[in-house]
Image (cartoon, rainbow, N blue to C red):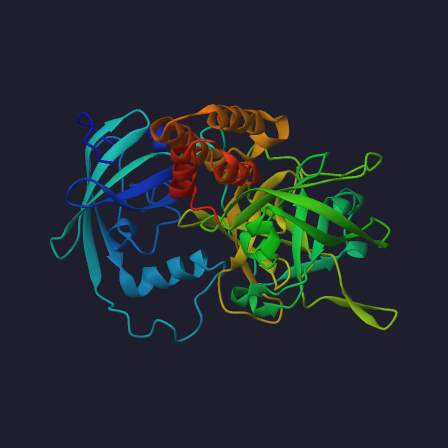
Length: 451
């Protein structure tokens, strides 16, 4: 995709202040080479200009960006030795960078000049000239997944993990407990970013009353059948508000998954008489107060001589974006992968815990979490709950079963790939095996690489 400069602008459109924006770094041909989320604060600095709250540390010139709403050029001095350690710490869920980590950074001030080359009401083309004379180009726009949301960042008052058992939280939080469950695996879950390998456990949570649930891709990847044939059996453990535990064996179907967002959506085949508590998607403001609950591997109760993971709540702040994910001060530990991050006030779903942002301590590490709003925008997760996604795929597969040419089959398969789903793959394998047309079978094999 190539972005052309918009009409000339007198300054940054005010609509781009205090709202999540998508920052796309462009190459010399105007094509996107990287992207990240950020927010430009409406609170001016000492020089009267506006700064970014959560700059991508991989885009050095963006760290030196500044903006005015009345002028299209803004100059700023960025002291790498003073400013970068703080940015690094906050992007790692910490208040301060580890002592001694940045002793050798250059201490001299670096000048940057930001020019708004053109703008519309909700986007801008930007050039940033660094102290060395290098010019970098960016295109910023309102982030689609957050267009109707206010995202609020806040630093924690102290760098302390706030983790509690179910007996230490109020009734509101206890009531959420049965929506979150431990997946007890038969394989190993690679939680190396959270301090090692959790031998047989991960966390997941229901998002509907009829059994749809979310977890991490890296959690479900330890179950080969889940990925290979999209169906598998899981044993789950739930904790009730009074602290009792219960176990269930579930037949589940994989509906969608992705490694970049590290998520998996599955559907459990629930008994007809079962009642499921579930977590709803956040519809209002996001942050700054957060809570997560899951089954970390360092919190163990002894039950009948066996170690059983304890449901643990962890509290913290939404501190910013880290590339296209959230960075929080909510501490998680190996085994809590796949747990939900909730708005601590509304208890609605904000994000999906993925991995730790920094090296492990006694209480784990601050969580990097994938925005469920962004996952939903990219993969239509909540369309599964209404059946819309399944109906869309059913129509494609029905037409494919009647196709007679490679071209017609390819067009239908492109639509299927565009749906970004695992739903229907078993039927596609059957069509690839049994369809009368060799061309249709070949199209399925080439497009989907099914084995």
